[in-house]
Image 1 (cartoon, helix red, strand yellow):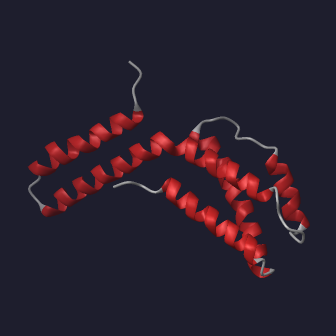
Image 2: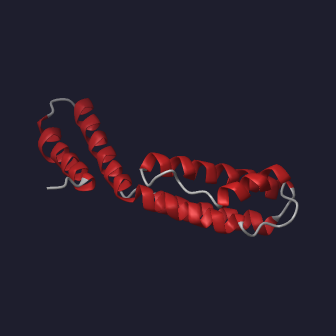
Length: 141
């Protein structure tokens, strides 16, 4: 049998909530047990979607960075050009996360430029992306 990380974490959370929490003798321990169970549920969700959510973000950021208005600092443009052809070192979550962090760094630099140069349309495009990204990474608890 191949273990399923998402299911395993969900089962651990359920065990804490249904078997351990009711047996605790203090409010503090019960609250901590509930918090740990909730965090395990969040971890299960993240385990299941981590690579997909980050790769979706990266694809959207690359598309956004492909159509920038003139005036973006040359050093930023050079980093963007280098990044646009890059891929994560592997599909391991740590490598995808590192690539995702680089994408977000570039997006932040472009966003800073958009706000300073009062490029309202670009600023709005970036904020709409950030809202979609937040929805993609939100936890259902």
